[in-house]
Length: 185
Image 1 (cartoon, rainbow, N blue to C red):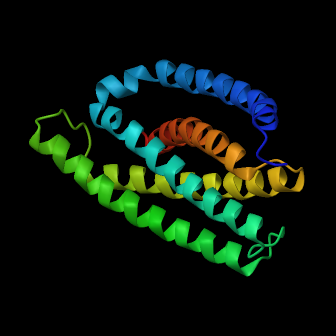
Image 2 (cartoon, rainbow, N blue to C red):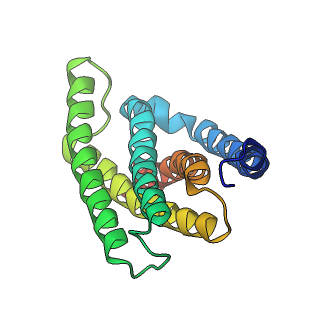
């Protein structure tokens, strides 16, 4: 019986413990880079958005994969055509979403008299690069989590959300600061 509360709790405790520890690391990374956020407060607004969109897209992909695995429309294979279609859709949605949100955040900051510290093309490049890299990585994590949990008899629905949202938060912060550093800000 896959929906036994005991099985859900027993399988959930290790993954929730792991993800909580990973979130602590993300918080430390954020605190360690707080000088950048004070110099460029526009990124302080951007971090929750980047993390949210990355996690949401990965979770949606994971939910679609979990449903497909449960009903048999998706096979346990990285070559599955429906899985590829879902992945491509997630990537397209991610690119469009990050593009629109980058524009909105920049102009909200501009009209709110927030100290920008960078021009629009720089900001757009940083957010778009961060978003694309994040969505690709989160999509891979989502697919892997769905397949591994399904193969091991665990309900992917109980595994994907905590794993993907935690990695989305952590990777979103790491990637954003790496891109900011690569740009030279």
